[in-house]
Image (cartoon, rainbow, N blue to C red; front, top):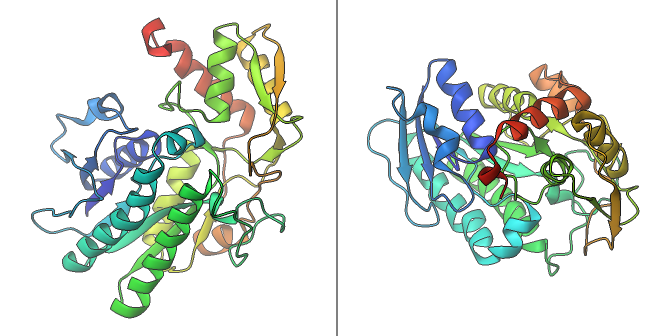
Length: 314
């Protein structure tokens, strides 16, 4: 296959590019480097099956030649990033989705949208099933990301129903692993960077809020399985194992051997209290289950951050 991956130089997108090339696909990686980095795909730059294009998909997207699949992963994906870039986040979720859907339609390609557990907001249903409509404050600071993804899902389903486009929607839950940016603001990277530096681990709220952390290798494997399926409705891909943020802090301290302490600050506005996917559809439709336990995945992520030079941690 020839596959276009938008946001392909980002944390998750770069791992997806690796997976696709390893299985024999040709990959066109499109990224504007607002949150992605060239270093994430540097090892692919000279590969005959890889092309890197710097472009903002909020502007018209065109790719010469045939395309078999378009995977839309371009977007800021952490609260720190979309707080800094609220308009860009809304634009890549709306205009970027429209433009990449148009590319898929023009090429007769399969389209896969990277959506998110954030479409469930601060959920009142637990665990979160795909038919749950969510509890989202569209006017709050997280609304720029939540509503961008909800709109993107609606646009994708409209192209599926109206144009007959072959579409997929993956709802991604708290992915972590190597190539996360040290300063990206997500809890796993925040904790690891602080622990390695001997600084306090900052827990917002009382630490009882929960997340379900999925190692990047498992996430990519699930996305690839969804791409090969014929499923048009959204599918959750994430770990069904639920941990409190305080438990994650202890796991990180254990993995790093750090004597850092934990400090507590007020919980941000609209921060979800519980987050865990119902993965029954992923198991039934895709035969997918995660295989990397949190302690193993954290250890592998610690080793990655530990390998970075001091300037890389700045």
